[in-house]
Length: 236
Ligand code: ATP
Image (cartoon, rainbow, N blue to C red; front, side, top):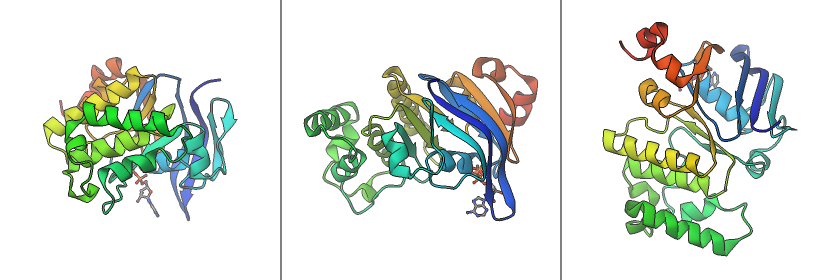
């Protein structure tokens, strides 16, 4: 079986069960968005997939392998990269150094250098600032950098936690353009996003999460027209 499959996943913080039996799959090449209110458990779910939080019960499989109790770097080697909430930049390091860190699992330095040059060509704002500390970039530029850094590990699946949070519309567009580009290159995407309209427009399937559970899943195109979704998440 290819892609990511979560089965009856439960994650706890002490006595609080933040994820309460979630089933979800992201097939190879698919883009799935996860939307829902604050505190629904979306970040918790992404962190557990990336190996940053222990799983209380249930299963996580990726391309047929169990990911339970694996270290984050091992999960990255299996082809899953996380773009965390708040971007996770090394602010003192330069743009170029941050990008190089994204490729630390790679053993083909020549190809990495070519890919980094390609990033500079595609996103000139990063190219022009390659020697500047990442902390000096605008929020949107940092988000692009964070996404490109994750892509340099050549993931099969990219997990993104609210990548457009606090960004101006033009930078939000740039972030989605970079995700569309990654998807065209064969990367699957699991996106947590507070802008439900954009998330649905840029995904194949959506899951809506409330208080630790997924209560609606379906094709994104169908959910855009669903009156419950429109009222609760699209402000219509
Ligand atoms: P948001 O959209 O606000 O980021 P979310 O859907 O990502 O929300 P989570 O951050 O996963 O939600 O939080 C799920 C629940 O777990 C919330 O009730 C939250 O208060 C709680 N929680 C999150 N992190 C911790 C923690 N480190 N310790 C204890 N409880 C936590």
